[in-house]
Length: 288
Image 1 (tube, one colour):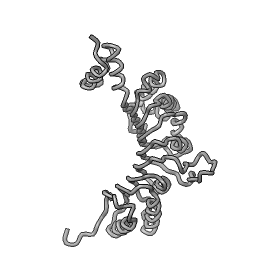
Image 2 (cartoon, one colour):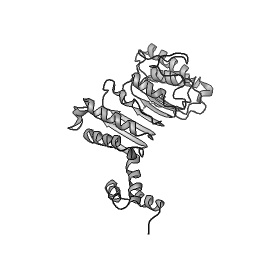
Image 3 (cartoon, one colour):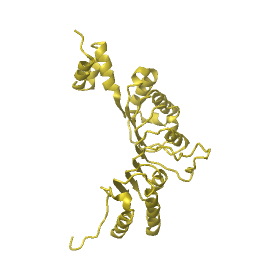
Image 4 (cartoon, one colour):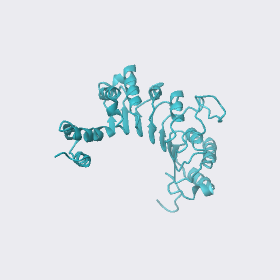
């Protein structure tokens, strides 16, 4: 008697490990469909050579590629990674990743972690048609990354490690400069983590940001105060109240923490729903 689709999925769900799931692929066509969906729904790529192999597989077999909804790629430094990590600096590695990404048309969650930035690696995002919900991006900020973000209206959770304000200008809707992030891009973005406040200042206005994690770039008090004022003025332009605000600082102090706290309170309506304010060094009266 043939098992139902639900029975196949239930058996696969309780399989011990990925090896057992692979073995189920050989049992019957019903098990193959359920097992492949479980194997390819969420993929982690860390070993460099295996990443190339798996990306080539996805590029060659669209039937499997469309099963991928969540993908994480770890790109290690040549000096600290595995023995095959020298492949990372070669064009064939990035080409394989690019071709694989073009086939995962149903991808919704994409993380690419890199030990360091390889110049212009964001070209791997060209010709990608998937629409993400979550994107963790260690890629260098360049025209290709900006163009990709301009075509991702469904992203709600974004992490970017790099931002180059000197080369990118956020333009008005009438501008024809395709290398700039459009004002109506990322219209559903609500969770933003970025290593530069400049990126936050550019991305927060007119978007429903509720959770922000960033870091002060300045260390001199007067410059940091100006940076804080600029950031908070941009936060005031968010279309939703903040729930979480975390601003890291390379040199925490009681004085500046109190100044930051006072400035945040002055945002009034924007912080009525605020539940988390990150790390602050507050003055404590009495002996330690």
